[in-house]
Amino acid sequence: MAPSRNAKIGIVPLGDMTDLEPNIIAAHIAGYLNLEALVLPPLALPSGTLDRQRLQYNAGKMITALENGPYNDYLKLVGVVSVDIFLPIFTHVFGEAQLGGKWALVSLSQLRPPPAIQSSTSLYERVAKIALHEIGHLFNLQHCENTGCLMHFSGGLEDLDRLPIYYCRYCRAFLAEALRVRAKISPQF
Picture 1 (tube, rainbow, N blue to C red):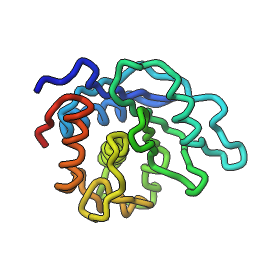
Picture 2: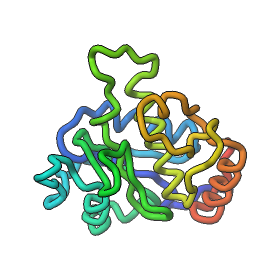
Picture 3: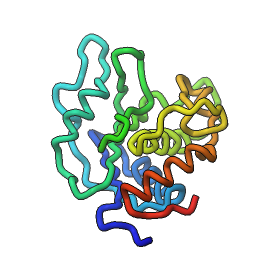
Picture 4: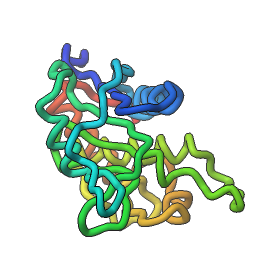
């Protein structure tokens, strides 16, 4: 089945950052999900999303602000930020997405290990894992109980580093069905 015209995932840098991380995310989406992924022109960080007491950006407010923005021709959108983001129930989050929503966020802030700690997992693998995890949420995948699945919840870098960069067979099946119905494609993963 040929992909529909709008079966593209947009990667949107938000605020100041290099082009590298958004391009890594686009490459992983294309490689793992067989979807067209394009890095789009950057946008400013949404105003009114900085919590001055916490000195972090509210991820929920950012997504709400982005939903009224440009790029309506894309199936799903992933905003990439270098700032620290949070949800009121967590001290920080690596990313955020609403189940079945249009926008997800990936934050680079917490993904870099402290200089004193050597990590075997690179920043770029972490960025790719978070992006693919959040895209799963955009296609209605919930957190998976399988610790060998990319959709398993990770609350810290050690948890994230232990996760594989692939979905379990059940999450793959659910994602394939969501893509078939929503994007009119049959992925080969």
